[in-house]
Amino acid sequence: MTSEKHILHAILATFGSLPWIRLMRCNAGKAYTTGGKWIELAPAGAADLNGWICIPSPHHSKGRRIEIEVKSARGTMRVQQLRYRAACLDGGVLHIVARSVDDVWDALEREGYPRR
Image (tube, rainbow, N blue to C red):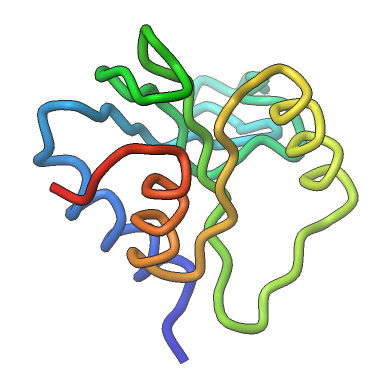
């Protein structure tokens, strides 16, 4: 079984070289710095990757915000992740649950972004 880490890196490798999409890693929760302080990261439940699509589609004339939650074949979403996904979808954000690179391509095609 492919780990979430490997799937995440494959998605970044595939889409990171495309000029029309920008993705970045998003860490959620809190982290302890080397200076001894806690810092707040993204809110609990935030997707693993976020960014934007720089080209219009038939449904969106100015591009679109994108969030990708990466899961292994047996991975399930936690309650916070489900709430975050619902908030994204309510706000018009393209939120994808991806278990593979093809899952991302398929979701983009459903939204009118062609495979390039």
